[in-house]
Amino acid sequence: MPVGGRHREAPSTDQREALRRPALAAPRGRGAARGQGVPPGRTARERLTAVAAGNAIGPRRVDEALAITGIAKAADRRAGNFSLGRSQRLGIAAGLLGDPGVLQGWRAGQPG
View (cartoon, rainbow, N blue to C red):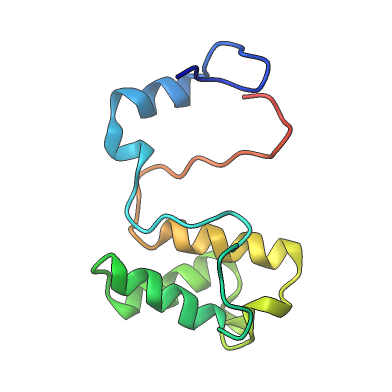
């Protein structure tokens, strides 16, 4: 499988490192960057609690991930009403639940 952006450029150093160290490429507590798959009536806290429970992560880490991403004040609001930016933060919070050493992000349509 080719690695790199949509124009098949060489992989970045971070991508090569993730391939050498699979634990970096697949941290526990993965989440979609836009919070897709979240039932619209579920709150951000409920969503992260479900992800955490499925990965044997305690509820304390949910509060930490919400605080790190700056959405702690919106934690009890329905995720279906979130703006795009807040939805992205929810996805990042889900990715941070497992306390990964590296969390690699990307922007759709941007090379590498």
